[in-house]
Length: 290
Length: 270
Image 1 (cartoon, rainbow over the protein chains, first blue to last red):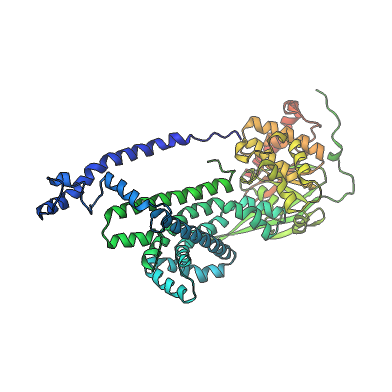
Image 2 (cartoon, chains in turn brown, red):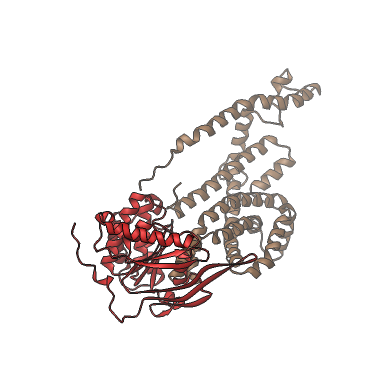
C-alpha cells in the first residue's frame, strides 16, 4: 500500500484551538451566570464564607453553572466507588449496553427492511409511509407505553430500553441501506448481466459491498439516535440504573453539579460510540482510501 | 521495415459459419413525443478471428450495436446470431467478454479479485487464482495483484478490465471505446498490447471507437457508421500486414485507408 494518509495529529490542531477558547470563556461566563443567584442568596442573610456576590458566584451549593473545582468534586463524588451500582461508571455501562443492543436490533431490522423495500415495489408503497409515520411519534410519548406493553409479556429492565432505542435507530439504517443497495454502478450491473449472474450473486458480490459506505453513514446517525433513545427510555419509564435514571433523580434533587457531570459522561459515551462505528467501518472496508 | 505474413486467424476458413451474423437489425428507442431510430437496417457478418472496429460520430448507434450483440439491449427488428445462437442464449452461454468505456472495476476488490470475479460467478472449475494470475501476466500487471483499483492509473485499470474479460476464455471480446478516456501516449501503447493479445489468444474482437487512426491500426475490417438514423455506411478492409508496429502508422497505405474512412464518414454527414 503506497497510500499516504493525512496526519491525524495535524487534524486535531484546529479542534484543540476551539477547546482552548471554550475553556478560557468558561470562567467569566460561569461567574456571569451565577452572580445573580449569589447576590440574592447573600441578601437573604444566609450564612456564607464569602462577602461579595462575585466571590460567592463560584461557591453556590446549587450553581446555575458549576465552577471547575465544583465539577471536579462532583466528578469524584459520582464516580466512586467505581464498582458501585450507584456510581456513574456502572450506570454508563448499563446505558452503553442498552444502546449497543438497540443498535444491533436496529441494524438487523433496518437491513432486513431495506432488502424488502428494494426487492418489492409493492412492499415499499405499502409500508414506507407507515415507517415514516412511526418516526413522527415522539419517543418520549411512546417509551412508557412500550415499557408497559413489554412488561405484560415479562420483558423488563434492560431489554425494553434497548427496544425503544432500536425503535428510533432502525429508520436511518433502513433508509441508508436501501439507498446503498440501489447505489450499485449501472456498469457493474451490466457487467454482472454479461456474466449471466443470478440475482443472489448480484446482491452478494455487487449490491451488498456497494452499499457498505451508505450503511456506515447511516450507522453513525443511528448510534447517536439509539443513545438518545435509551436515555429517554430510562427517564420516562421505571428504571433502577442508567444515565437517564441518574439524570431524572438529580434533576428532581436540583443537583446541578451532578447534572453537569452526568452530561459530561453522556458526551464521552456518545463520542466513544461513534468512534467505535468508525473503527468498525475501517475494519470492514479496508479498501477505502480515507 | 519487414512484413511477415498476416496471422492465420485473419483469413477465415471458407465455409465456416460466421461468429456474428446480423441481418436488417433495427433498434428504436421510445422518446417523449416520438421515437429515436438508434440503428436502422444493419447488415454485417463477422468471421472467427477477425478484429472489427465500429467507428462513427456520437449517435451513430455503434455502442447500441455492441450492446445488442451483448444482449444488454433487445432489438426491435431484424435478426442477430452470435456463434450461431440468438444473442440472449449466447450471453447465457458466456460467449463473450465485455470491456466498458470505464474500467468498471469493483473498488472493494483487489486487482486479483477483480479478475477472479467472472470465474467466481461462473463457478469455473480448477485453479481460479492461477488462471487469474496468468491473465494479469498477459496484461503485464502481475506485480499489482494485491493493489486496490484506485492505486492504479487509468491505463492500468483498463488493462485489468481486459484481463477480467479474458479470464473465462470467451471466444468473443466486445470492447466499447475502452481507451477513449486515456491520453494519446497510453492509448497507442495499449493499442500495441491489444494487438499482441489478439494474436496470442485468437479471439474475435469487436471494438467501438471514434478514432480513425486507432481503427485503422487495430482492425482487419472497419465498419463505418453514420448518425440520424444510425446505420452502417460502409465496410473498409484493412489490408495492412501483420504484425503491426509503430512503423505501420507511417505506412502510406495507412493514410490511404484513413482517408477512405474519413470520406465515408463525411458522406454520411452530408
